Length: 424
Image (cartoon, rainbow, N blue to C red; front, side, top):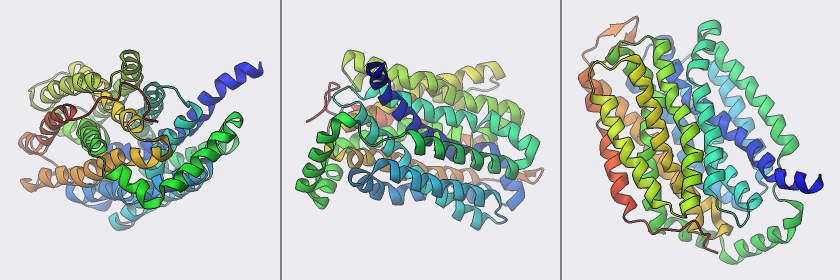
């Protein structure tokens, strides 16, 4: 029994930490289900909604590098609890906000926690699954995150229907309190038998030095190739699953809001299947680049179908969004690739380069940019006090998705294969 418990403990710890990631993905994606209510409550258009969404990702961008440096140097568990607490408070205050400006400020607080969640998961996984390939466990952790993303779609829409958007967000904050206590009781920084490794890493990090660790991670072009590739592979999920997917489906395809939330949620169901699959496949063949390229190519074809096919039925759109989530989940391999191409001592700092690209370029820049493009040629029409955008508006704004996926495929050729082996 002790041997079995020791075998299960890495999974228990990492899955418990993954609840933080799960919770943050609810916060990241719930605006998609609240969008119409927020536009109506605050009397704003898609450009201001893009600003609200962007404030969350701005916090990610600002705090990602500090998060990486902190996680490489201090107790992962303590950092998780502090930042999760900030996220819960920000979520509760967002529910009570009465202006778009205060709502954006409180979303910024929520985004601070998000800067730490994925890096803390990778940090713990690199310790508890020491000397094992990271793609599968990274895929399973990302599966938990996208499960949170799916909760933020149809289930959140049902909560909004029964309790209003403010009540739904208060319930969401209460869920965060439950997760806080689970992590408090279960998560540990290191297994007992790796205490020597803990001290060794501390000494190695001290020898490398603060600025040298940053230079090693942020001046490594392989990290940037992988990060930009991950950003554009992930962008369809941000745009169609996180922010504007519901409005697109309601206004361009005349689905009901409930149907649209169900369709959007299929992206996250697809990733629930895709992330462990691509992680397993990549570990199995000891290759990161081939699965990334194949997944991105298929995602490119599916994105073209979603955006440009006319008169798509409800069932067909569900399948397309499911497949889009499955194929774009190949982007998760960029995190494992980056972790393997850098010393384990600076795992969090190195992986933060990928997150800076995904959150900084994708979340903070491209989501508000797409919202701006959407409103650029808007004719001012409103339906039930919500701005109504034409199919042409969406075609123009969403053109960035296939272009980005082409860039991702080209970058794969510049990446040097890690063969699922850790650098040191």
